[in-house]
Length: 69
Image 1 (cartoon, rainbow, N blue to C red):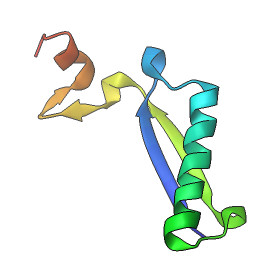
Image 2 (cartoon, one colour; image 1 turned 180 degrees about the horizontal axis):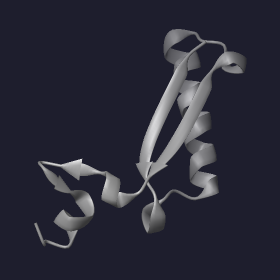
Image 3 (tube, rainbow, N blue to C red; image 1 turned 180 degrees about the vertical axis):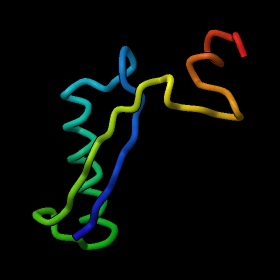
Image 4 (spheres, rainbow, N blue to C red; image 1 turned 120 degrees about the vertical axis):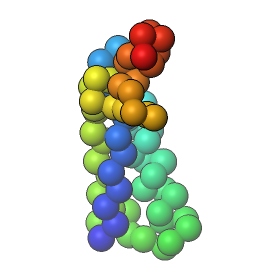
């Protein structure tokens, strides 16, 4: 049973319900095509992480985008 966890930024940049559905279907299709996995047992989870909980290079992404860091 494949388990795929996708993490995306939440808030204003969060994907729409339609985009999430497309991600889930696309990842499932990819696992079927490349690895021959059963789509009925393929699990895809999308986690939305608030921008203040993302960091790159020692600084929060939200801070870096506002060029305050």
